[in-house]
Length: 356
Ligand SMILES: N[C@@H](CCC(=O)N[C@@H](CS)C(=O)NCC(=O)O)C(=O)O
Image (tube, rainbow, N blue to C red):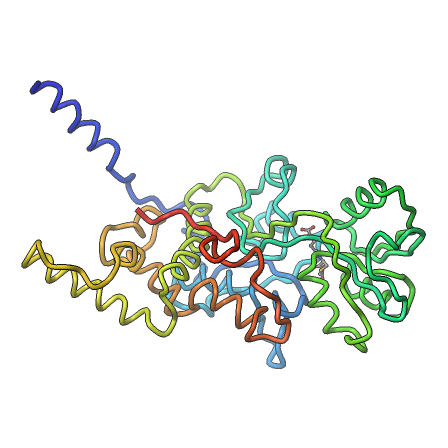
């Protein structure tokens, strides 16, 4: 019996012990440089684009800033590299950037054959079509014989071929390496339809001469899980970038916002102090919040950071829902509905593993 108990205790110790803190080479370099080199889209309104002051803003930009907040408690510690579709992965492979946050679809070949890894999905998307209202088209299935504008080096051009083939339709391709050329060609009437990720269609439409003259057709022809990407071979950095995303989603689930995060942390600290005095004390805050905010446990250490890593992210950037709303959702020009990007508990599929 005694031997049996010893075995259980040893097993439990083994299962619960966290690994020693280890900063990977990328984090070391980032700390040495004093900033994160983040690859972003040159101009995709709502996701990554420069404002009048020449500063990058947007949903993807905020992911770079969230990582900078975790590492430096300062979202401004980012150096942005604008990259088009063709250049983006090479910039990561060559070490020119530390991470990529640029509406990039997580596919098997990209994830397994290119020396890069997707850290998660910050936006569940799908490919759609935009046409001029004057064409009186209400479905993509009416596009037989159409001329379609598309950007090269994307999943978009591959899905387009699949879709037309599957529906036994013909099309003429007008392809460009740069988005501006795609949009200008469509705006000038050189093609009947423009196709890209639905998020990109809404962003592109705003940049056209007369946005109201165009509609997005209802068909979504592919799965485009968009997410941040890092180089293979640095597990610690991969973990850090990945868990910043999970922290943002967990914060939304727990109702922790930019506004109330200080208060939530104070409550967690008070709970701990009361519990130390009286084990029967009923905590006011949730244990999940205490772990996320670094009050309980040492979770930051395992990704090479301090325990206030997630607290700093939420304090600087807000939670996932807040980032979504102000850049592309209800509080933005784009007005994109949460849809698939609502939390799993609210009808969407955004779901983060627990901090434990
Ligand atoms: N998600 C797709 C498409 C991403 C993509 O590059 N989309 C275009 C059209 S919205 C874009 O962002 N272009 C901006 C640019 O290259 O400047 C992929 O990863 O291949």
